[in-house]
Length: 283
Image (cartoon, rainbow, N blue to C red; front, top):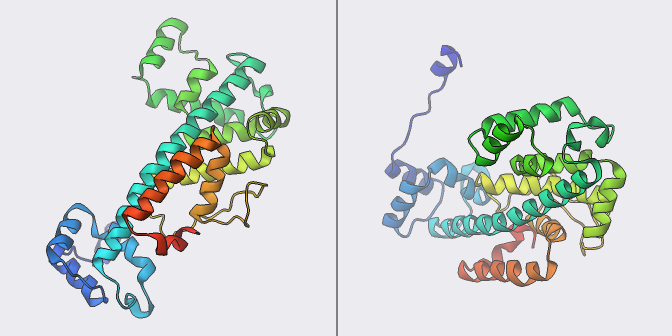
């Protein structure tokens, strides 16, 4: 960044008192000032402003009746909801790591992933190998990497390499598998079209990133809609509702999802009294 850019930036930091005054000047009602000050002490004002954004009307004013406490309730619900979703996305990610690594290794060998011919023609193998090298380098202190370096000169089987994959890398790995291989996994474990699985994995990667980076879910739809299949009883869109239907389709136990995830979701809705605000999530 040049010195010119530094000079052109004129915005000054604001004290918590000033931050509250700004909210009030925009029409926010603060019933408990001490509570509001505590919230802004532990939550960056810039971050919390994202939760006020859905209530903003013309000329920077908030909708009539907007209270600080009501927005914080949404913030806390969103926070707990992200945590709940992350725990189930973790299981989906671990499940898919096992599926693709077991399938690919059994068909092409433990080191078959090093052979470009074991993937579809659209696969960019040099970029893939380079990605793995970077992952190994950034995790060089992990015990299993040290083990493979000491015993096998750094050569690792696919089932070890996939432990380094992010959700996004895992999604691209499946997308780059040969079409018959994708179809076999999709048919055997999910009963869905392989393109649908490919698309939904990408969607879950986006959802996982949103949750991991504490992004606002309330009134903040995703860019892409999951591919439709028989499990959708409505046209899918970028709302969280559509993404959770897609997540269920990739979960290893649908009954467990319906019983435990849905139950936990309902408990959160009741705890934070969010039943009348679920339309912001697509419900």
